[in-house]
Image (cartoon, rainbow over all chains, first blue to last red; front, side):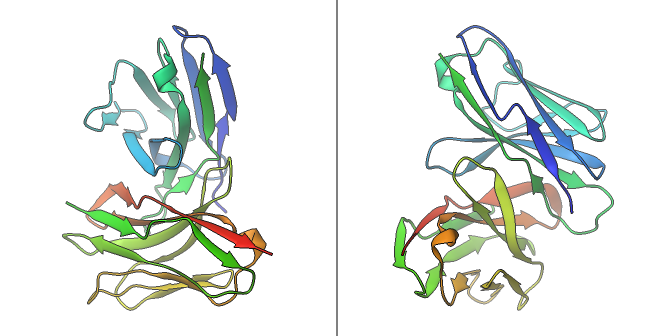
Length: 117
Length: 113
Protein backbone atom coordinates (compact mmCIF):
# COMPACT_ATOMS: atom_id res chain seq x y z
CA UNK A 1 0.00 0.00 0.00
CA UNK A 2 0.88 3.66 -0.03
CA UNK A 3 3.98 4.35 2.01
CA UNK A 4 5.35 7.71 3.04
CA UNK A 5 8.78 8.04 4.60
CA UNK A 6 10.41 10.90 6.45
CA UNK A 7 14.05 11.62 7.06
CA UNK A 8 15.46 12.11 9.56
CA UNK A 9 13.28 10.50 12.19
CA UNK A 10 14.80 12.77 14.81
CA UNK A 11 17.22 15.68 14.82
CA UNK A 12 18.84 17.82 17.47
CA UNK A 13 20.28 21.15 16.45
CA UNK A 14 21.62 24.35 17.95
CA UNK A 15 19.58 27.51 18.04
CA UNK A 16 20.07 29.61 14.92
CA UNK A 17 20.80 26.74 12.56
CA UNK A 18 18.57 25.47 9.76
CA UNK A 19 17.17 21.99 9.54
CA UNK A 20 15.79 20.21 6.48
CA UNK A 21 13.22 17.42 6.74
CA UNK A 22 12.43 15.22 3.76
CA UNK A 23 9.13 13.57 2.98
CA UNK A 24 8.96 10.93 0.28
CA UNK A 25 6.14 8.91 -1.23
CA UNK A 26 7.70 5.52 -1.94
CA UNK A 27 5.21 3.77 -4.16
CA UNK A 28 2.90 6.42 -5.55
CA UNK A 29 2.95 9.87 -7.04
CA UNK A 30 1.99 12.49 -4.52
CA UNK A 31 0.40 15.39 -6.32
CA UNK A 32 -0.22 17.08 -3.00
CA UNK A 33 1.76 16.88 0.22
CA UNK A 34 0.92 18.34 3.60
CA UNK A 35 3.01 19.37 6.56
CA UNK A 36 1.66 19.18 10.09
CA UNK A 37 3.04 20.12 13.44
CA UNK A 38 2.11 18.30 16.61
CA UNK A 39 2.76 19.60 20.08
CA UNK A 40 2.94 17.18 23.00
CA UNK A 41 -0.42 15.63 23.83
CA UNK A 42 -2.14 17.75 21.20
CA UNK A 43 -3.65 17.25 17.81
CA UNK A 44 -2.11 17.90 14.45
CA UNK A 45 -1.97 21.43 13.16
CA UNK A 46 -1.82 21.84 9.40
CA UNK A 47 1.06 24.14 8.52
CA UNK A 48 1.00 24.15 4.76
CA UNK A 49 -0.10 22.38 1.62
CA UNK A 50 2.25 21.90 -1.29
CA UNK A 51 1.48 20.91 -4.85
CA UNK A 52 4.22 19.60 -7.10
CA UNK A 53 5.85 22.36 -9.06
CA UNK A 54 4.09 25.25 -7.38
CA UNK A 55 4.43 27.36 -4.27
CA UNK A 56 3.14 26.06 -0.99
CA UNK A 57 -0.03 27.42 0.56
CA UNK A 58 0.49 28.28 4.21
CA UNK A 59 -2.13 28.26 6.92
CA UNK A 60 -2.84 31.43 8.79
CA UNK A 61 -0.24 32.18 11.42
CA UNK A 62 2.50 30.04 9.87
CA UNK A 63 5.57 32.02 8.85
CA UNK A 64 6.42 31.13 5.27
CA UNK A 65 9.91 32.62 5.56
CA UNK A 66 10.66 30.45 8.56
CA UNK A 67 9.19 27.20 7.30
CA UNK A 68 10.34 26.82 3.70
CA UNK A 69 8.56 24.13 1.74
CA UNK A 70 9.70 22.76 -1.59
CA UNK A 71 7.79 20.14 -3.60
CA UNK A 72 10.15 19.66 -6.50
CA UNK A 73 8.94 16.27 -7.68
CA UNK A 74 5.95 13.98 -7.41
CA UNK A 75 7.68 11.93 -4.74
CA UNK A 76 9.55 14.44 -2.63
CA UNK A 77 8.70 17.44 -0.49
CA UNK A 78 11.05 19.15 1.93
CA UNK A 79 10.44 21.35 4.94
CA UNK A 80 13.30 23.59 6.03
CA UNK A 81 13.09 25.20 9.42
CA UNK A 82 15.29 28.27 9.09
CA UNK A 83 17.09 29.85 12.03
CA UNK A 84 15.52 27.36 14.38
CA UNK A 85 14.79 28.32 17.98
CA UNK A 86 13.73 26.23 20.97
CA UNK A 87 10.07 27.11 20.41
CA UNK A 88 10.30 25.34 17.05
CA UNK A 89 10.92 22.07 18.83
CA UNK A 90 8.07 19.81 17.90
CA UNK A 91 6.99 16.67 16.08
CA UNK A 92 6.64 17.35 12.36
CA UNK A 93 4.51 15.00 10.29
CA UNK A 94 4.04 15.01 6.55
CA UNK A 95 1.29 13.37 4.57
CA UNK A 96 0.68 12.83 0.91
CA UNK A 97 -2.27 12.42 -1.34
CA UNK A 98 -2.20 10.00 -4.26
CA UNK A 99 -3.37 11.95 -7.29
CA UNK A 100 -4.51 8.79 -9.04
CA UNK A 101 -6.93 7.81 -6.32
CA UNK A 102 -10.46 9.14 -6.41
CA UNK A 103 -10.89 8.82 -2.66
CA UNK A 104 -9.85 11.66 -0.47
CA UNK A 105 -7.25 10.09 1.78
CA UNK A 106 -3.93 11.20 3.10
CA UNK A 107 -1.06 8.82 3.85
CA UNK A 108 1.08 9.88 6.76
CA UNK A 109 4.79 9.66 7.32
CA UNK A 110 6.24 8.43 10.63
CA UNK A 111 7.14 11.94 11.77
CA UNK A 112 10.33 13.81 12.61
CA UNK A 113 11.14 14.85 16.15
CA UNK A 114 12.98 18.21 16.11
CA UNK A 115 14.72 19.40 19.25
CA UNK A 116 16.35 22.82 19.19
CA UNK A 117 18.82 23.48 21.98
CA UNK B 1 -16.28 26.07 9.64
CA UNK B 2 -15.67 22.37 9.70
CA UNK B 3 -14.55 20.84 13.00
CA UNK B 4 -14.27 17.61 14.93
CA UNK B 5 -14.90 17.09 18.63
CA UNK B 6 -13.63 14.04 20.47
CA UNK B 7 -14.14 12.87 24.01
CA UNK B 8 -11.26 13.80 26.24
CA UNK B 9 -8.97 11.13 27.56
CA UNK B 10 -7.24 9.34 28.80
CA UNK B 11 -9.46 6.31 28.68
CA UNK B 12 -8.25 3.43 30.83
CA UNK B 13 -9.71 -0.03 30.34
CA UNK B 14 -8.92 -3.56 31.33
CA UNK B 15 -8.10 -6.09 28.65
CA UNK B 16 -11.19 -7.52 26.93
CA UNK B 17 -13.36 -4.55 27.94
CA UNK B 18 -15.67 -2.80 25.49
CA UNK B 19 -14.40 0.45 24.01
CA UNK B 20 -16.28 3.50 22.81
CA UNK B 21 -14.61 6.76 21.84
CA UNK B 22 -17.09 9.45 20.91
CA UNK B 23 -16.61 11.71 17.92
CA UNK B 24 -18.95 14.33 16.55
CA UNK B 25 -18.40 16.66 13.68
CA UNK B 26 -19.55 19.90 12.12
CA UNK B 27 -19.36 20.25 8.38
CA UNK B 28 -21.02 22.38 5.76
CA UNK B 29 -20.78 19.80 3.00
CA UNK B 30 -20.67 16.01 2.87
CA UNK B 31 -17.41 15.02 4.49
CA UNK B 32 -15.53 11.76 4.56
CA UNK B 33 -14.78 10.57 8.09
CA UNK B 34 -11.69 8.82 9.39
CA UNK B 35 -10.17 7.30 12.48
CA UNK B 36 -6.39 7.37 12.74
CA UNK B 37 -4.23 5.71 15.39
CA UNK B 38 -0.88 6.96 16.62
CA UNK B 39 1.47 4.73 18.58
CA UNK B 40 4.14 6.36 20.77
CA UNK B 41 6.80 8.13 18.75
CA UNK B 42 5.19 7.29 15.43
CA UNK B 43 3.10 8.99 12.78
CA UNK B 44 -0.56 8.41 12.12
CA UNK B 45 -1.95 5.23 10.65
CA UNK B 46 -5.35 5.01 9.05
CA UNK B 47 -7.55 2.73 11.12
CA UNK B 48 -10.83 2.98 9.22
CA UNK B 49 -12.91 5.35 7.15
CA UNK B 50 -16.40 6.01 5.83
CA UNK B 51 -17.24 8.19 2.87
CA UNK B 52 -21.01 8.58 3.07
CA UNK B 53 -23.91 8.44 5.49
CA UNK B 54 -24.69 5.01 7.01
CA UNK B 55 -21.38 3.58 5.84
CA UNK B 56 -19.61 1.45 8.44
CA UNK B 57 -15.84 1.42 8.50
CA UNK B 58 -14.14 -1.54 10.14
CA UNK B 59 -10.63 -2.82 10.68
CA UNK B 60 -8.83 -4.97 13.26
CA UNK B 61 -12.01 -5.37 15.30
CA UNK B 62 -12.70 -1.63 15.39
CA UNK B 63 -15.90 -0.23 13.90
CA UNK B 64 -17.44 3.18 13.33
CA UNK B 65 -20.67 4.12 11.58
CA UNK B 66 -21.19 7.41 9.77
CA UNK B 67 -24.35 8.87 11.33
CA UNK B 68 -25.50 11.94 9.47
CA UNK B 69 -28.57 12.49 11.66
CA UNK B 70 -26.46 12.77 14.80
CA UNK B 71 -23.28 14.00 13.02
CA UNK B 72 -21.31 11.32 14.78
CA UNK B 73 -18.65 8.72 14.00
CA UNK B 74 -18.07 6.90 17.29
CA UNK B 75 -15.28 4.33 17.45
CA UNK B 76 -16.08 0.97 19.06
CA UNK B 77 -14.32 -2.29 19.76
CA UNK B 78 -15.86 -5.23 21.52
CA UNK B 79 -12.75 -6.51 23.29
CA UNK B 80 -9.63 -4.37 23.60
CA UNK B 81 -6.10 -5.68 23.93
CA UNK B 82 -3.03 -4.21 25.57
CA UNK B 83 -1.63 -3.67 22.08
CA UNK B 84 -4.50 -1.27 21.32
CA UNK B 85 -3.00 1.28 23.71
CA UNK B 86 -2.39 4.37 21.59
CA UNK B 87 -3.84 7.77 20.76
CA UNK B 88 -6.87 7.76 18.48
CA UNK B 89 -7.76 10.70 16.25
CA UNK B 90 -11.08 11.31 14.58
CA UNK B 91 -10.85 13.36 11.39
CA UNK B 92 -12.93 14.63 8.53
CA UNK B 93 -12.14 15.83 5.08
CA UNK B 94 -14.34 18.07 3.06
CA UNK B 95 -15.32 16.44 -0.19
CA UNK B 96 -15.20 19.81 -1.89
CA UNK B 97 -11.85 20.81 -0.44
CA UNK B 98 -9.49 17.90 -0.67
CA UNK B 99 -6.68 19.84 0.91
CA UNK B 100 -8.34 20.19 4.27
CA UNK B 101 -8.29 17.57 6.95
CA UNK B 102 -9.72 18.52 10.31
CA UNK B 103 -8.53 16.48 13.29
CA UNK B 104 -10.02 16.04 16.71
CA UNK B 105 -7.82 16.58 19.72
CA UNK B 106 -7.06 12.89 20.10
CA UNK B 107 -8.03 10.39 22.80
CA UNK B 108 -5.37 8.41 24.59
CA UNK B 109 -6.34 4.81 25.33
CA UNK B 110 -4.56 2.82 28.01
CA UNK B 111 -5.38 -0.88 28.20
CA UNK B 112 -4.23 -2.71 31.31
CA UNK B 113 -3.59 -6.47 31.36
